[in-house]
Image 1 (spheres, rainbow, N blue to C red):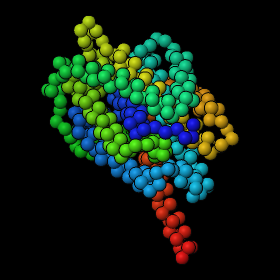
Image 2 (spheres, helix red, strand yellow):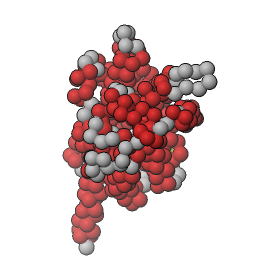
Image 3 (cartoon, rainbow, N blue to C red):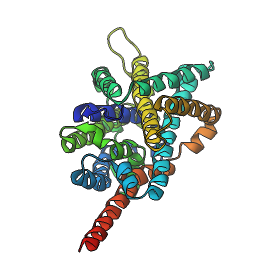
Image 4 (cartoon, rainbow, N blue to C red):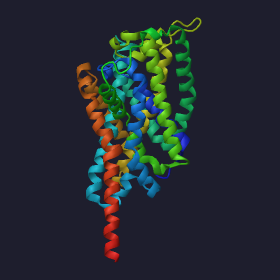
Length: 362
């Protein structure tokens, strides 16, 4: 399993599916400081910020494309590599728990409001753990198959909404100024744990990574802009009153004899959640296995799944608790550290090590 490789297409398709989950499960509380119309220009800032924070990772990979941030740090100093490992594992664990918790909240408040969904969520986590057990390649292939289903479904739902769109619902952009839009863009980037995933996965990817990254970045940003366009033009200010606006938007969509398409978007949600949670669980087990070689990866996957279930039961038992833990500031810090700060530190530390080595040789 250590030598598993994905093509750039498979890898970034997997990241696209993973980030799509974040988009379709968007909570209205994340953009309370700006108008929905501002979300149409916010992607411009997201692309700029997303490109800038990946520069250290790009420079590391360009210099040494057979090693990731963790392996380079471990080769330089075991003392330094330990907190780095802890940081990545905690980040991926946090986003795994929040992925599952959001699915729990959605199922318990929207789909089955009068039913206890705990057993369903436990089964879902175990299913994700099985996906992690199958490995990196299996998750990549599953992501490609999922994209074949997810993309047409999203296009279909958006197409059915074109007749309901009213441009009069759009408000002037930057209504409250530019800074709230930039802040929201930073929050959005913070929710994109995929940047941190790239930092530790590039050696497992073959092909044109640079092209794959920019295609992924642009596509997932365009998808978000399109979905917010329909949310703004179809629902207007009503969207900000909904817990899950895009689910409400899909319930408004209709085609022929089908009056509601929210069941379809729910299936998309579950499919994307399987890929994302499975990938995050796999990465936690993989990173821990490289640190604790004697422990089998299968045991680490099971242990991660069990801890995720326990954490979810605690967090999602009350919505106020979920809202407190699902914090945009925490996400910005974790994503920023794993995608930019640590790679930058490894890059600088590696160069200093080379300078010292050259001085000794002289």
